[in-house]
Image 1 (tube, rainbow, N blue to C red):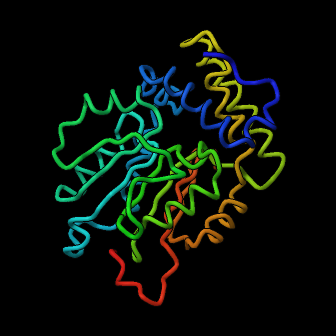
Image 2: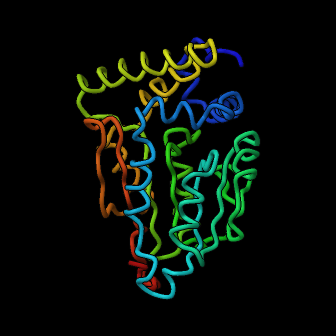
Image 3: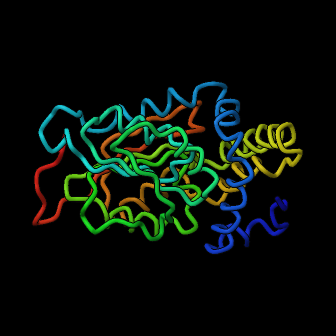
Amino acid sequence: MSPLPSDQADFLRIPEAKREYNELLFAEVARRYDLVTRALSLGRDQAWKRALLDSLPVGDASPACRTPVCVDLACGTGDVTFALARRYPQATVCGVDLTPEMLAIARARNHFPNVSLELGDMHQLPFASASVDIVTGSYALRNAPALTVALEEIHRVLRPGGTAAFLDFSKSPHRVWQRLTYCVLYVWGAFWGLVLHRQPAVYAYIAKSLWHFPDRVALRQELSHAGFMEVSSRQFYFGTLEMITVVPVPRADAHGPCT
């Protein structure tokens, strides 16, 4: 895989270029993705994803909650997708990812009859409007080629009363913490990129992508503008990561929420 283009600022602001690079990046890291995710998180990744699942509606609260339609964005090798299937055994669960190499690994691991895994783009989800009850995304929004477009698409497919929960690296609104987080992530990611791929840029991209991602305050403004209301959030690792759970703003024709 080629290293990142030298003009990072311009590159990460061009949706098509960012999408193409993400396809190359995740094709390259697919075989080692689970290993490096655990290494980068010092083994805490699965605990954070369990917290993400725990923020979702309780499965036995109502018939609608027992049989939701769930979509896991940027599903990668499928760990959150399969966790959704375990949490909601009667649900219809679909994992969506941009990278065939990631989906190949997820499909080989899939033993759930209610799970499908589809090649797709957050900018154009293969679901009808107001057809999905639950959307999850772990390390998804930061990699969206255009965040505004992705959020609008998530809002489109969610039913009134639906829930979306996102886990990702988080950017402080304070400049000093931004730079500290950037430096730590850049060095830590570059180390693992060098060890596993002989290319520091592979995981140093995490820091680069976070630098151009909205900070926590601006992200909430983006969510609000897209029609979402925050219901809960939780930070991990001194604010380096954050989980946010949101619901679509109720409309006049909305049905009761699944809670």
